[in-house]
Length: 223
Image (cartoon, rainbow, N blue to C red; front, side, top):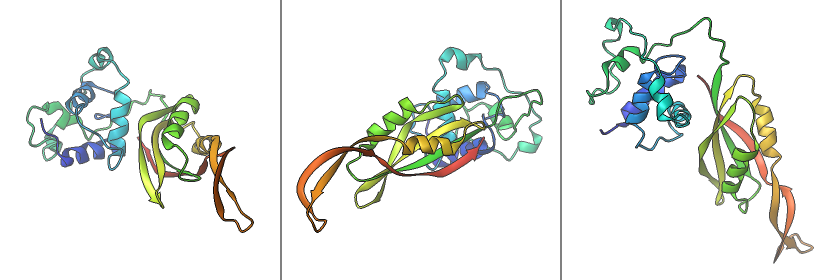
């Protein structure tokens, strides 16, 4: 089955205001659509909510996915114009009926979640951003914080890239604390000896130094 960008856009719109495709809890619809797109490359941009949903569902085994319940059946008359996969009739009709509904359970005490994307800029071109990403994934661990393992390297200027990393956080997590932990990453930084005029002389040495210049939030979206 071929998935078009318009299909991704519709899924992104749904997940912008819903934690799952049919509301606040996962259903067989999530499992089915996840499997439909499993062989496709989901980009963090321009689909941050779809990307976060997809990466989160990858953590579940087939046994767990198969255990999710059927979605609640709604009257479909007011959703007749909504068509998620117009060119793909094999997508079950129930998804079209439920996709724009967010079911709120007043007894549900689960904390709210958000997807956050950090732009992480190194101090210079010699910093290994792949290593920085590995350090963040391994060392910055908190209850209520889940890193999205895939990350992007984006050009900034003068051949310097920045690291873009996404995570899903509960509302108890302070993003400033995460940023401070990232800013605290240190390592061996290559430096060049300079002459009395401040010009490099082609002799290099390594020193323990902060590796991160800045950490900014480029995207913050509540589920």
